[in-house]
Image (cartoon, rainbow, N blue to C red; front, side, top):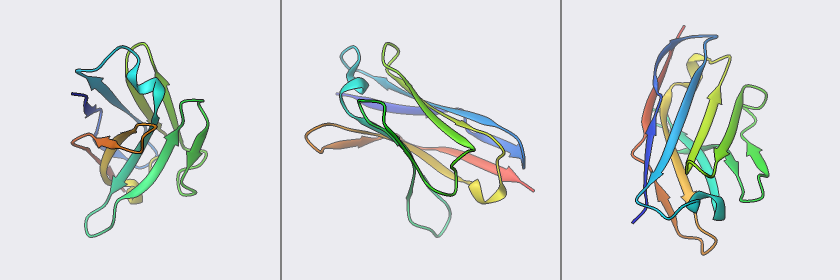
Length: 119
């Protein structure tokens, strides 16, 4: 059974950077390469929202609020997805979740990692 484990969250000042990682464990080699991987976030009192996705063909999609600041990438050999976050703003504060969506439509989520940006 595939599990996703996020890491890399923390406290950072506005304008700073963080790199989140999402490692797929318990999986066959390269499993993340067959589906769409994505990062979502949920701030207190708000709904979970899309941050960035990457398809198996490496097509990317970003929320308007993070375009030009965040970059999603994927290392198929390492079964790991990354989210490089630059020029962070206090409004980026949230719990960040990674998702792997299989071609069937089934999806799995990680447990989340907290990102806090101080002003």
